[in-house]
Length: 93
Figure (tube, helix red, strand yellow):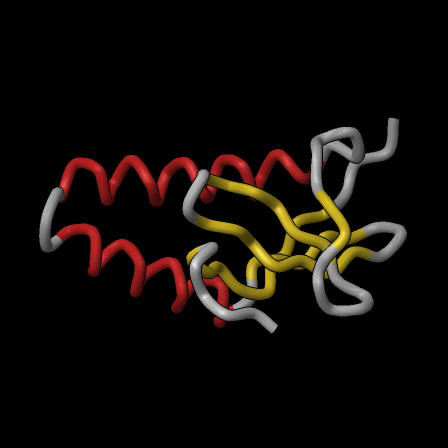
């Protein structure tokens, strides 16, 4: 089975860092666990059967990485690019 190459953009990294810093204020342990979970789920997108859904913006897909956070994705025949991480309550698009 072919696997996708995973690319995590600078924006994805900045978004995740911001989320982790915010959660750290209340619960440092939970922040580290959340960061690990989001990276792990994003890395699992290398498997073409790992679940993702059609994005709300044309040409994108979404990964529900945590009940409160989604990862915005673009996918080609060989690559899945993690574009951004956002809280589900955020008005998007």
